Image (cartoon, rainbow, N blue to C red; front, side):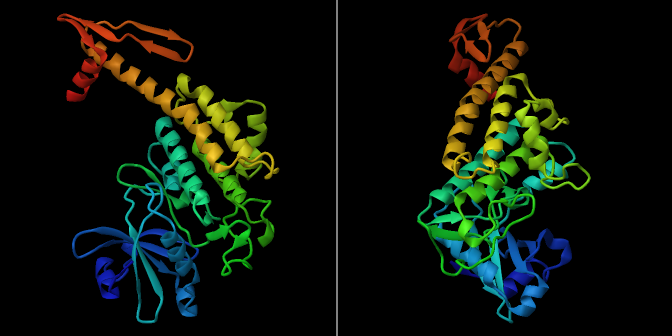
Length: 353
């Protein structure tokens, strides 16, 4: 792991100027920095309170967790560390230019479209599945929309492993075995009431809350709403199949996605079930269900939309398209003024435009 000169990080952030802050948390701030070679990075520095106490436990834990995990496209990457003159730890992470899921849902000028929401949900599920299936497994303990970041290609990345613990079988890392339940109110599993209740199902609950948040654009806790908890608000509506009352009303839900979103809500309801042993799925089951429900069908529908758009731009062409319910069957050839084109030639023609 690379050890950065602290002076380089000071220069990269204009001496940790407030204008460089891109994120804040209970344990410190994240600054946007530009290294000497022009590389953009995110630099995590502890709060003044922790600096005075010289408490590096959260950042040291994050380093240990991230170094124990293989590289994964849906996890934040640690680039290196540094220490200031007082010995306080600083982390250097890859920069995520498109902000957090929380900001995208609650602060962006325009709400995200449904395909982007589905993609983010599946990618976050894969990230959590990956850390749970690692050896030893990792329990994140603070999965929330503010800890999900977007890279330059709008891929979702799970971040902030300061509260995470590693577990092999029923044995938890000795450094964390006596730690109290931790997390963020609204996302914290109510079943996690003591260290002995720690399990991967705690993360499943938190993911279920994030899933409800993605679909509804409702905050996990909203004191202006009764009930204030998104779980208590959404579960009765899901049980009564009142999907339209849950979905973000700012964005029209495409007809071909209605049944899929309904299924996604059922997955979320199982994730936040109080019966953690029998009702809550594993993250592997969540990923399988979501991918089977969405990926191929949504992708095919998008290809049909592209094909339709191409044909509308070329009045002389016609396509034979048969629709039956959700199934869409496109003809393998398209008639043009020059005879017949294979479907792959039409798609190549679209790509060239």
